[in-house]
Amino acid sequence: MNRGKSIAIVLFQLGGPDSLEAIEPFLLRLFRDPDIIDFPLAKIAREPLARLIAATRSKKVRKHYAEIGGKSPILEFTQRQAQALEAELSQFLNAKVFIAMRYWHPLTEEAVRAVEAFAPNELVLLPLYPQYSGTTTGSSLNEWSRQIASSQLKEIPARVIREFYSDKGYLEALGANIGRSLAKFPTGEEVHVVFSAHSVPVSVIERGDPYQTQIEGTVELVLERARLRFPHTICYQSKVGASKWLQPSLHETIHTLGSRHTRNVLVVPIAFVSDHVETLSEINIEARQEAAQHSIRQFEMMPGLNDSPKFIQALAGLVLAQASADLQNVNGQTALTTTGEI
Image 1 (cartoon, rainbow, N blue to C red):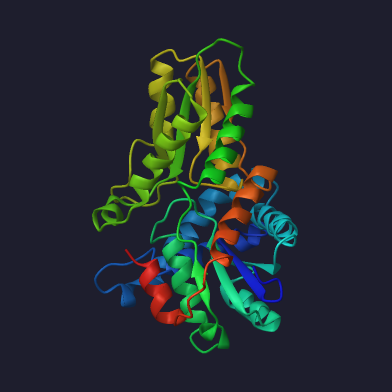
Image 2 (cartoon, rainbow, N blue to C red):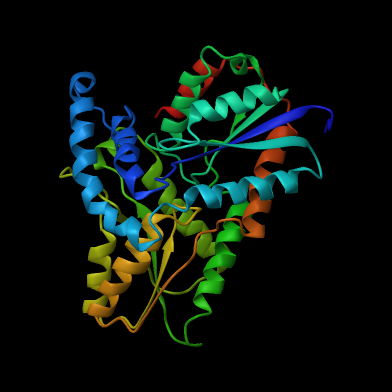
């Protein structure tokens, strides 16, 4: 491996509002995204629809952000991941890690300018979504392609880590985190493990998006590797709007488990690598309260992988596997758009 070459690693993440006042503009960016809102005549209707949804939604979620400190912690966790990953890679590479948030600062265009200033010889693009979906990874990579269209970065050799749900290091980090969470329950008692993922519209899956299949694959692989013999359920959370989304919901699952007199429940956020409002509020506050209402005796949430050493080592392994290969000089617009679409 050539330590003389400089490599820029770009971590892609959703982003989150850094204040209560930032909630509505954050949501407006999200619902303006053509990879999120897409339907016939969407170019005409997307902007007014996005403004309506953002205004309505911001009032509903303001309380959730207030409960966790008035802002999203996702940037802080991603910064820790970037710093730890850069330190891990420094043993092997001349590497610098950058952050590109999709809907709030530092935005993708800000990351592009920072990477341009670094002037790397090679690029590794690493979306922090274990399972691929066009609504997350695809959206981030499509935005990167748009932003580098007039940049010298489109001429730099690049590799994309499209998904890592089946990566050995990632599964080991996840299994270890599950194990620590299970240790909170009384020894010898059965625990029902609830794997919760962000939901997506069923129409997205019907168009061929592999997200649901990869969620199910992640659960199967981690159960196998961790040798977990507890009963488990896969469910989905954070539905928005009236259209049909993946089911069952987290709320329905908690209700069902309560009706079955389940005593112990561990919720594992299976599609998130960093804690944010959907784990800290929706699961750890709302679902916890619902569990108590349904007489579930002990409710625990597995914390996000965040900057845990095993997860950082897994990310480093993913990057090193790409950096050690012969990087192909590809046209950013063509290659990344193709990679990001399903």
